[in-house]
Length: 228
Image (cartoon, rainbow, N blue to C red; front, side, top):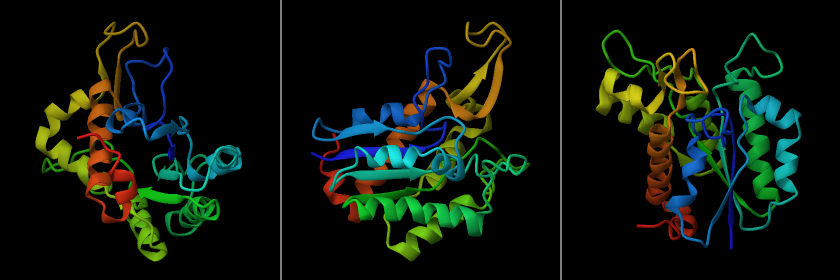
């Protein structure tokens, strides 16, 4: 039966004991599927499309990728880092080209690429609305690549922003790593982080991903294995 691989960054990645309660949404995706689907989370903290490819991590997936498998592709957060040439990608050139590498990799292996717009950071405008540029231009480029290549798109940027909107600027804090001083042994100085998720936030975003798969007419072969 198919394996669903996740290629991405720290928003999706499995977190070690020393990072908890920080949690990646990929840690919760398996519970949305029957045993017919295996979720193999290859997302890694701190990676952009550039560094993920440079480190050979897509090649590593290729060692296990089989015809009929799925590859979920979500980046953008670290691609923004202009101060770090090992990770930064210009949205309309490098980022686009790298996304095409991921898409072509999955198809050349007989599998199915799935593009996810970046999950949004928790950033609000002065008017109290989620910031439409919370992950810069990267979600829009992801949409363009999906349209140009005929690749299924999961609109996680928009759905995560809608979630933050519903919870409000204050209520959405619970989805992220906001801990007071001495609030957890792993973070004795406390932490205020509007990019990385708490357990609740990761679970909610994983549910958004599952819902997007369920609603995608192009992914019926995958959605039929979702739990009700």
